[in-house]
Every structure is written in C-alpha cells, then in structure tokens.
Length: 548
Image (cartoon, rainbow, N blue to C red; front, top):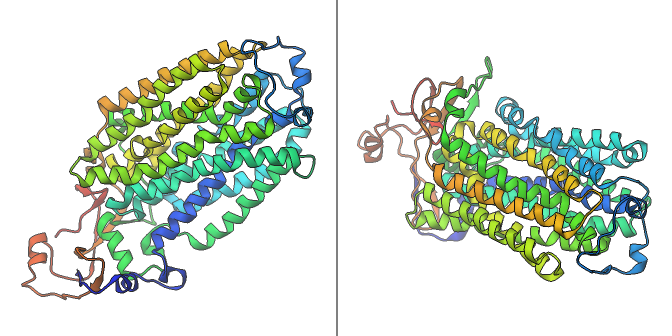
C-alpha cells in the first residue's frame, strides 16, 4: 500500500523519482512534452502551405481573369516592395482550393485505421510514423510543385493519409498513460501543440517566403521538414506505449498510473480488438461527438487553410502581415486549450459530473463562436473588427478540448482511439469541402459579399454542432465498452493511494489477513499484481478489475 507521510516536497519528488531524466520529471510529463512537440510539428507541416501558397501564386496573372474586388474600398496594407514580389504559378481560386483541400482527401481515409493500428502495434509507432512520413514528404514538396500542380496535390494527399494516424494514436496513448484526475489537463496540453504549431508556422512561413533561401517559399518546407525528422528521432528513443513498458519510470509512478487506469497488454497470439460495431453506431453519444467534431473542424480547418486568402483578397494584407494576422486566432485558441483542462478539472472538483462538465465546456467552445462568426459577416470590411472577431471566434473553440475532444475516453476508454478515428473521419471531410465551397463562392469575384456567405455558413455549422452535443452527449463509460469481450488482458496493482500531504512513502503490507483495506475491496490481501483474462465482464475505466 502507498501511504503518505508529512515529510516535505523534496521527499515527495524522491519517492516518484525514476532514472536519468526521470529523476527530475515524471515519465508521463516527459511523454506529454514529447507529444506536445509532435503536435507542433504536425501542424507546422500541415499549415505552412496555406501561407506559402500566397507567395507561390502569381496573382497578377490570376487577377487578369477575375473581376476586381473594390467592395470594401481598401488599399494594400503592405509595403509596395513586399507586394511586388509575385509567385510563379498561375493557379486560379478554384484550383487553389483543391490544392489546399487535397491534404484532407487523404486525412479522412486513415482515421479509423489509425485507431485500430494504435491498439494493434502500439501508439508510439503509429504516431511516430505519422510525423516522420509527413516530414519526409514536406522536404520533397517544392520539387513536386515545380513538376506539376497534380504532383503537389498527390504529395498533400499522402501527407494527409500519414497524419490520419496521429490523433487516434494520441487518444490511444493517453488512455493508457493519463490518470483519470489528470486526464483533461494532460490531453489539453498535448493538443495545444496543434495551435502552437499553427501560430509558429504562419508568421515564420511568411518570413521565410520573403527572406528565406532557395528562392523564398521552398525554404519553408525544408526548415519544417527537417525539424520534423529531428523530432522523430527523439520520439523513437524516449516514448513508450505504456507505463509497464517504460524502462526508466519509477515504481511509484507506474503503480499510481496503473491504479488509476489499469494496463492493457495485447494477446500476442490473436492481437485483435473488436468493437461491437452495431452498438457503437447506434449510440447517440457517439454521434453527439461526431456532430461536435464536424463543427469544430469546419471552423478550425477552413480557418487554417482559408484565412490567408481572406486576408489577401479582401483585407489586402501583404505576405508578412498576412502570416502574422492569420496566426492570431490560434494564439487565443492555444490559450483556450491550456485553460480548458484546469477549468474542467476544477468543475469536476466542485462536484459537477463529467457529463455536465463536458456539456458546459463544449457549449462555450461552439455556441459562442457561432455568434462571433455572424458578427464577422457584418463587419467584414472593417479590418480591425474583422480580425478581432475572427480571432475570438476561432480562439474560443479551444474550450471544446475539454468537451467533445476528450469525450471518447470518457464513454469508451478501451476503444478511444477507434472512436477518435470515427469522429475525426467525419470532421476532416470539412477540410476539403470548405476550400471547395470558398473556391466556388469567390471564383471570378473574391468579394466581401461572397466571403460573408461563407461566414454565415460557418456560424450555422458551429451552432448545430453545439446543440447536438448539448442534447445527446454522455459522460460515463457506456455499457458496450464495459462488457465487450476482448483478447486483451488487464492487471491492476492492489495499491491504495491517499495523498492528503504531498509526500509519499511506500509501505508493504504483505498478506496481513486483518488488512481492512483488502477486506473492504473484497480482494485477496496480496501486494502482487493480479492478472485476469477479459471475457464478458464489466470494466472500470475500460479495464477489467482484478477482483477474485
């Protein structure tokens, strides 16, 4: 049993110290930092084309085939020297929409496969694969663009397919690593890397396009691709699929995690994970997540890919200002992501149920942006108001990270990666539908009036997704997750952790038959781990208990 003795914070740290780096930082926190940096890389590799495309396209040639846009009466907000530098490719708005959306053609194809493979071969491998392959393909992107526009589209489709493995893998990874009471903040911190990556990629890409090597815009792909390969090496060396496989984690931290979430080990003979598909697809809570995910991705993906075009075509910002201003919404989104975890955990500590907490956070993240996007449609010709409302609208959606984004783990922790794959498959379709819609709306007439229609559509989708989740979402593990058979095995330590003070001391009770704790838990009083095969037995947090 683990008991707490009021010694001091230094003793507490020593009690949870592992080896090497892990003497100073818990292994789950090291994993969170690595996963955070992985998300940073994923989004720099995804987003850089959105800004680079502004420098790649020859807008002088394109504008000769389009009517001029003087609706807002705005003049160029950048310096003439910067604006005079034009790109080499003659791609109209509709073709640009296909280039930007092509990533999501591939991205939506591998989501469910990614969740299944994460359970089959380990989330470490699938997440590392996603970043490494995307990085290598990014390095060859300039050559593909110079060869032909369809070669560029093919590269982007392949990048999307590779990144489709990433987020289901993260869900699967944290279902094994995140203690229940730390789940919101660990997942929120990890996914905040997506916004940090976007915030970094947009202005840095703008600078590299203007001042970089190899002709400007190609340098953006070389720099971010190289950083992604470098991260992949660190991930391969330092990440592990579960606490039981980590060679340097302290015994105390491992036992603390396993006590909270248990541990799964795949049966090496069968290696199968079989969700009850009929039950999954007939559960309203699953479709509540899907609806919210579609709304969030419509706002997030279309903003990432299309904001630079809006800044260029309507608000008349040059490439450097474009990159910086397009990143502003993701600064707020990142702050909202970081804040959402502690706020959600705070609500739960005040006796709000998981269900109510998820509904509150998700409503703030989708219904508030719906109102703000309506405002953008009415003030779009005012650059200050337009940028401010866009920044708040996209940014506030970050609170959904403690809403629908983590709800997969709440309702079906054993199948969290697969559920993430399902909802993300639907959500990512918006990544290629959005650019096509804007391409059709603005073809030959990229005016504020046409963009206003797009912002109204966005507001309606935000509102619908928010209401669906509010009405049908759940917060506790559903029956088919608890009782589904599996070829996995699960074990838990017979450890009770009580932490009224911040210091932990390990005391072994052995097999004392008078141990009240053992009698209360109805378990054999033993300090060893229990191993049992999961049949059609109920589970706790996705793992069968070891009661005998």
